[in-house]
Image (cartoon, rainbow, N blue to C red; front, side, top):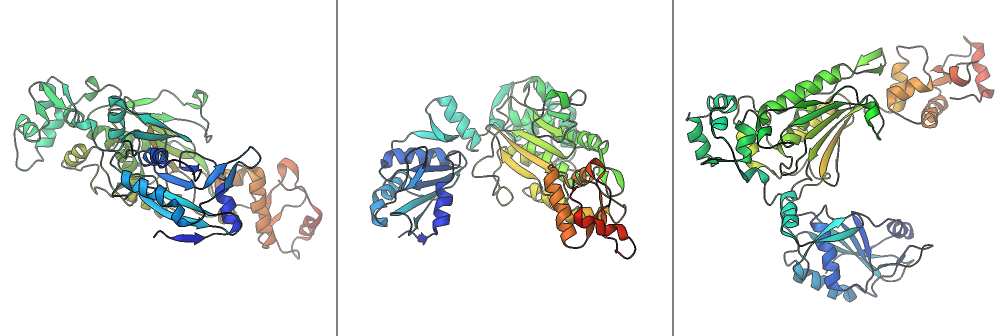
Length: 476
């Protein structure tokens, strides 16, 4: 028996108020189980999600209506059909929701993202796209899905190469010096099953070819760009200079990209409590996130890793979706290597970039917290993963304003927004008002409009003008 929960009218309406989308779907209780299994397949093969059975679509005025099963037994056919299609069921969780204000019980199915491909009752493969699904029935589409889920890896593909460019490269020669026991380059490459007559696996090219782009164009570089803006919607007009393309074997690409990004960041200044200050990101954060993007990207996609440096954040975009069962929500607590050979062998280099295998992102998050900066944000796009590293303090806006006034006599709305990262003038004004209500700030008398500013509250016995604040409405 699956659990049943009584929910309030407000909670039920909150569910009904959701939009159908990539992670949510509503289905009529009369849906055919075989058809429902297609939806389950689509969610499990994407990022997982939630399906509510017993919610029907009516009209534009009342878009979704609660119309549940008469009782939990009435949903048995649905559950049994899904069990037949997915006998292990480790990706499906069932619960019933009951609300006194609405008829019947709704079956809520939570679908987890899993590494294996999930099929419908007819054995077909579906993938969630937006608020709908698409059938995957061509070999290339199935192969792309297998790659996205980490079932296969492009690093194992073999390509025709000039083996002399691999066995005599600077990369393999420096690498061999640290391998125990020592071996001749070609012997080592063969023992690792990376090369055979005239061919080399992609992992071998990435690790041990000094110019892998010769064989893997648009797949083994990092493109570094500086945008002089804080805006989310960016255009070429904000691009500062020519993008820097960093190439070479994967080991040197990682270290060169981290160094180049650090140099770009050093030139950025923003207003701080002591005036203009250089922006600082924890070096561990930059290193771990760029390392993660290079080592765990999908090399079957002909696109570079992109590092975009903004005035208030850094974005690192890695081609390919998260592999296996990994999602943005569980990425710090689980592991699934898309390129296990690459990860294993690069860890044998002297001073490997992935010294703490499996702990990289946790290190990045901890380093941000240690500097009292907000944690990175991880999200998926249709064909990539983006990690945004904000340069925003963990302190509340109120704390930032008061800290600034420890070293400065006044603060205006614009300055406060630069310090806090708040974009709205009205939102910033409300911060000032909250501090005023607590008796911590006052608006400087006689200063209105563009010249309006705030200061620490001054005792009225020493500044009679402060009493004029009562009737002053020129807050900015």
